[in-house]
Amino acid sequence: MSAGRKRSKNSKLISPQNRAAPAKQKQISEVTPDQVRSLAPDAASAKAGEGLVGAHHWPARGIDGNLLWGECRGSGKEPYRARIDTSTVTYKCSCPSRKFPCKHVLGLLLAYAGGAVSNVGAPAWALEWLAEREAKAERQADRATREATPTDDAAKAAAAAKRADTRERRVAGGVAECELWLRDVIRLGLAHAQTSPTTFWETRAARLVDAQCPGLASRVRTLPGIAVSGVGWEERLLAALGEIALLCTAYSRLPSLPAPLQADVRRYIGWSQTQDEIVARGFDVVTDVWTILGVRTLKDDRLTVQRTWLQGSRTGRTALVLNFAAGSAPLGELFAPGSRHRATLVYLESAAPLRAIVAERTTADGDTRLVTKRVDELAATFAEALARDPWFERSAFVIDDVVPAKSADGSWYLRDADGHTLRIARDWQAHHQLLACSGGTSVRISGEWNGRALVPLGAWADDAYVALTT
Image (cartoon, rainbow, N blue to C red; front, side):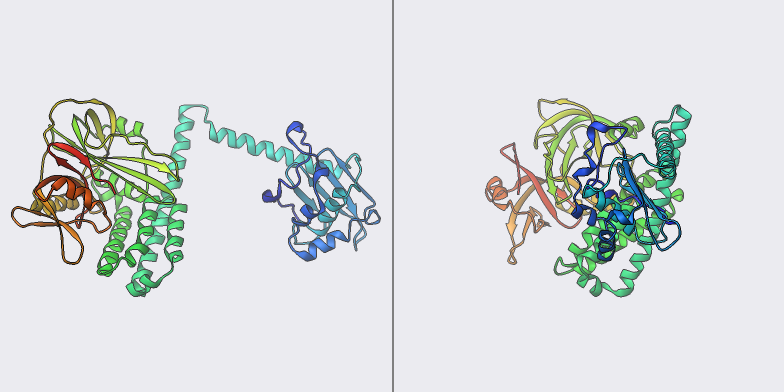
């Protein structure tokens, strides 16, 4: 006896009156023969079903509420019994066919679509099947309700622990798979990686998303772009692969790491916290008058990310506030570039605290002191943060008395009075604004630094802040 199978993707084709909600359901008579044929597993089954529409094949058949039933003559002594719950488009037939739906179910549906089946009370064998289905559905709904809404704190805690344990196991499996994949990438060589199609990388990223490792997935999605990034791509790609491998290794040894670094690893893997959880944790709370050094917004097909950089006048600390919007949803500025605010920030737990959320804020008037860096100090400052957090990606600085200039190869850089230079990112295009602020002389600039190149965010011209936007 073959079991029925639910085909949810076709449930809209046949949606008759439902005893539980009759006002919301259409009559099954609205279904067309073409819609029924679309349910067939193959053309042969559809043709066989059409051959069983005639009444002479069915000693008995009828429709009783949501229950469509029929007895069809076959090669055996007893007729095959087909029953269909039209409210969910599920079915069962006593024939030995391994195709779902079988030709008897299709024939019965085609007959009804053609108006050849009358309202007739269902026999006991059909009613028993429907009753069993309804009882099973009620048990499943009750169980889902109990799991979704625990009745006491202990049950809620148990449910939360179960969800956490499930995710831990999924993440561990995803990380282990990623480590094996990285070995394959290295074994095949960087040349193979450069010529691999986008699907090679996207398939692995999708697997990591399924394993609830969105942070790792994002890193994998950057790899194909690095592989075609021009001169020096080999070194950059190998470094990016190494960072992913180090992150996988760190996760496998998580209990042995210091607590702040554990928090970094989990965050880079893809764990997230709500703002309420961060505030309640209270890892590092700082109240200061903050100058907004700049705002940078980056978009792709999936997400818009806004990075807002702040510097405290009393503490001199730098903070990064992130704001997100899915797809094409609008994303307003949390702070205006160049403005000053008295605010309390709560830093996320980290070995090199940088990212923070705003607990409360007000506008601050008056002068604000800025901590500036020399060009030759940036590398050392960045290295200190990288030593604490091996995946540290970027920070923001204020650099005094630099002059923008263009090199012979067309790239731009900043030069200070001592002749030290700082390369400007090639994809940054607001050179005309920077030149207008500078006027050919030295200028104070705020920028985002990733250890290799600077993305200018703003400049101070005659003590007035000017946002540099591309």
